[in-house]
Length: 312
Image 1 (tube, rainbow, N blue to C red):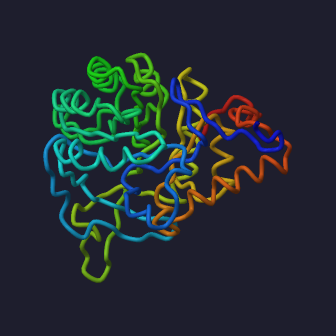
Image 2: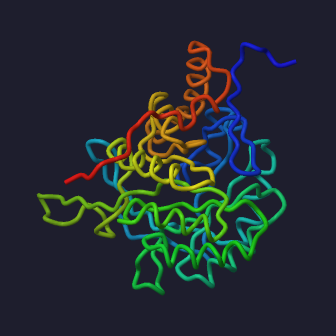
């Protein structure tokens, strides 16, 4: 019998129920963390993005530190679908937490083929990283515009019966329109959001600090942007929103839940403290107990805010 004083941390993401709302952001999680803490305490396991074929990634240097986070231009190195099916999937089958597979591609046809290929027993959901460059649109990410978002999600939806999460980009001026396009095309959830495009220069060498010149900014600096986008998308869409961006403390988690997220993903903070996700689960439960809150449903979307005005 469940302890009546133990809060219910379970999070419902469409048809999928997670034991708690804490999961890793793609690209910041690997089997190495199993040596540090029990990975089954997490709400879900979100793997590093895979592509259909092998991919070396971007030239070095790939990462540079910033005052409030980091910029990375890893370039989605991947060992391909065969390695995922033969090596990764059997390993992760040994855990109880649902497995979420992140996929990416540079064309819609390749995206569709990969989505079909990873729709395998043992996969609980597919996270479509539609924030990557689209070679069919001059390198612009699929999620930059509503039309390309709708088209690619429609193609993916036709290839799988698994829950489909669309990972959006903050580098768009149309976040609500893009979110609605993904929802209308059949996405089961939205992840808000990927990294913010940025750049850093070494003044000594007068060269970019990244081999790829530009990269994705992550960490505390982008939290207000990701939080705003999460709030906007949660208000505009009926499907669940998963907040992601600069989350490193219990209060960060609570802000995203109050803004309307049903779960959150932790990324850069794990590089600084490998056990941060396990700690946040405990701290969230302790806070709910102290506040007399019995379930996440009492928190999610409880923000009291007037309609946003015009900003200049």
